[in-house]
Length: 114
Image 1 (tube, one colour):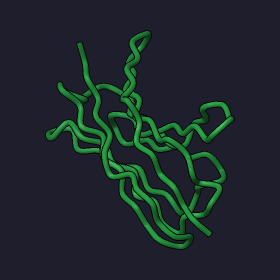
Image 2 (cartoon, helix red, strand yellow):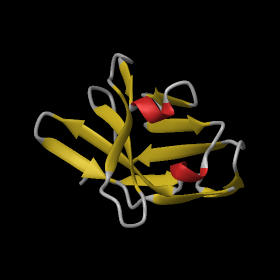
Image 3 (cartoon, one colour):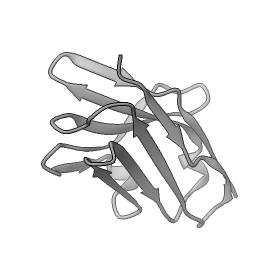
Image 4 (tube, rainbow, N blue to C red):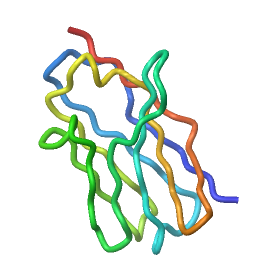
């Protein structure tokens, strides 16, 4: 069973930065890693993804502010978030998927105060 553990969330002021990490229990080579977020009362939404060969996608609202990366050797993914806005407040989830297999972490809370 693959396990994902997110860390790095916290409370910051608008304009500040945070870096989230996602540690996977096994290899991530060949898997696509994504970050999603779920605001209070909102549906979970896609934020960013990075394939095993580093093809990257972002939701428009975070382009230019967030950077996704991964370290296949360490089995870790990252989401660097800068110029944070109150609307970025959410629980952020890491997802690992390959074909029909998909695994989620437990989430980490990010709160951005104005």
